[in-house]
Image (cartoon, rainbow, N blue to C red):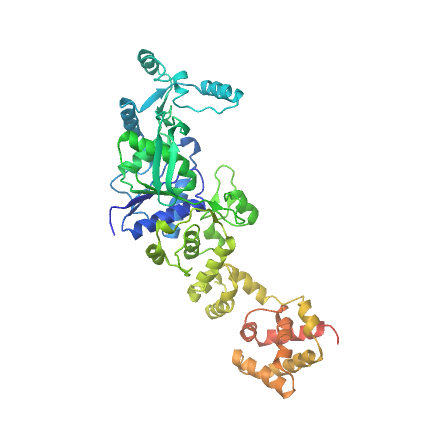
Length: 500
């Protein structure tokens, strides 16, 4: 193990944090903990036009809920403060100036109209415009213009951007931990803008500079950033720095597997793709969150860990500590991972069973006496997907049935069943010990005395009392309904069941 490993999660505060971003944060966290390294949280807010109020706090709260806690960064501090890129603006200009001085970057004075005209010209000839070694000599920049003219434009305050001077001929090669070797020819890479006309750096420059200054050793990020990786390698080379080890994570796919998971898919499918509920400050629209929908943090983490990674064993249930111990970049898949909502629900069901029943009763059945709430938790624990389902189950349980399972009546309602219910109805008032064993003994005794097998009667008895042909333990249910209620329900059913 080494304490030299340093990774970062660097989201942009442009809205709610997508669950795919949470997975990226989780994988970075797990890798850092596994390697005895550091996990940093950096906010990349250089794109001020897309900044959304409240988004940064949302990111911090979401990570805190899941226990993905940074060692350094926003909200924590550390040796490389500040960790918001908007607060590091002056720093990036110095590095852009260094590239200009070394001939690795250049000033570009093209207006949007200039670029639109060039783009239209290329499109009219059936090709796509690219600002590169072939076109830059025909545009308004410090490569094509005389030095005196460049100085005059800068002195007069003409807006400009700073672009990277991508080599005309060359190949970028790097080994990705997940995808192995990647090869890209420089002719396919634009002379990307590094500093915008407003003095703010673009993502590319700020990202590389910060990763270098913050001593990031491994960049673990989504597959959507893979096309940017060759450009970032070129930037590292231009500065003369060693590039970090890259690992590009697989996409999260729609539940059916065809295409990238989107918020629209979630809306149509009725499931969340955000860790916590999000209210859009511009529209007021509310998006579902895993937390508010009733997913436990342990289940959410376990589910996310398996979206693209597997431990190589049959084990599925992992605590956060166990995930740290089992995690490795080598076991991350290249192929996209289906967002299987049913699997997320399965994880939640398993983790609900591990919760403290007393706490569940107190939190989700607060209006009931403590002992009764606890009894209901035990009754329904194997039958709920989300904790808030408890209240709904109890409400359904306590409501008297007004319809009865027709399929069971059609197959099970006969003379023996009728006789059995009548005998039980006569015996129940005399049951002194109204608890499961006492109730069961009384029913068994009266049926046996009258030559009727339990199997002939029990499902019909359940239908008579609950309206349903299946459900939780019937004797415990009868205890919870109470003697008077059971007798009343049975009497009502006998009056309503079809005549024989």
